[in-house]
Length: 186
Image (cartoon, rainbow, N blue to C red):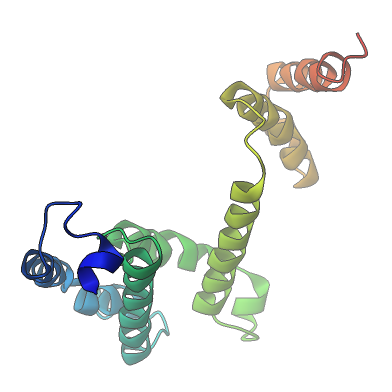
């Protein structure tokens, strides 16, 4: 049954080999079960983030198990999934301090970690939306859209004077290109 479902014979492997590989992978990755909660709760650094160590441990185990099961049973691909440590440090040392500076956090209406996780969730939803868009644009189009959006975002934030004049020129030229040339009006 396992051989038919996972096509083990086609891949020149056996159930024993795959079980040994799975145990080896688990033992290699098991550190994340303890390190991730220590980082996200702040206990590793002697600072409190407000995130509960036990809750983060549970979430880590459940997320890793679910993602690995999806990879194994749906994709039939032997890849273990777990949270990346780099993102944890970025969250604790960049996202949380930025979220802590918000008025809602300082007034006590919410906590920095709740705002941070909300931002991460919204970024994940936006990522899924972007991935769902057909790849009809090239990398050059993406760069051009970046050049167009940067001055607009700075202007909206009230920081338009920080943008160099050449960026405004490039944004106008590229915007004209998208409006007239790409649409076929010229």
